[in-house]
Image (tube, rainbow, N blue to C red; front, side):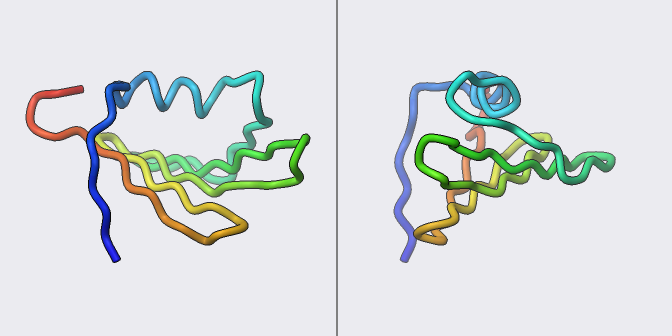
Length: 78
């Protein structure tokens, strides 16, 4: 099943929040040209998500539900 919706946050803002947040611990797993794989861990709920940060989109896979979220810019909106 695919569900699509718009969000008001901009992609660079989301990436900055993933990399530096007081809400979770971020660990870089792999960094290559054009791709950064990180995990974010929430110590309060013992949960984690795996995130792939590409140049123009982000893929987030949650641990508990195993859902995958794809966040990307559409058109000229960044």
